[in-house]
Length: 156
Picture 1 (spheres, rainbow, N blue to C red):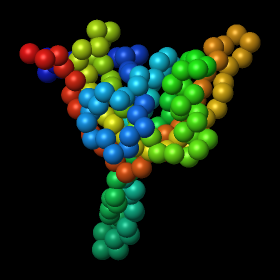
Picture 2 (cartoon, rainbow, N blue to C red):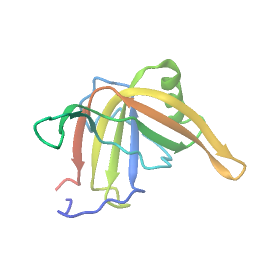
Picture 3 (cartoon, rainbow, N blue to C red):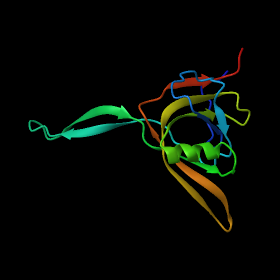
């Protein structure tokens, strides 16, 4: 079980691909792990902020609008023939997919937090060079908010 003040490390993240956008089960057996995630995918939320002039005071007011999930960039060390090809195809076809991210506390990958999103891959670029690993950079445009969030911990 997670301790009250566990600290997360940026290198311990696992991503999963799912094609069933109606799924709401965090532990769905149809998720396929996306191997070789090369960079920490930043997830979260943001709100539009409006600066409203208030003429009766010397300071303006601020109002917040509805929330949204910003674009999520995910880079992988490219493996031809793997699930990476399904991600490329989803980007090419413009189909909705489901992506699950789990952020682990340590290398044992037994305790962490996770989130599942539905969305579209709006970008897929091939990267690399003569002295760099060949990679694929994907951009996920989240459709709505999180589908489900969970704390992952071993069964007691």
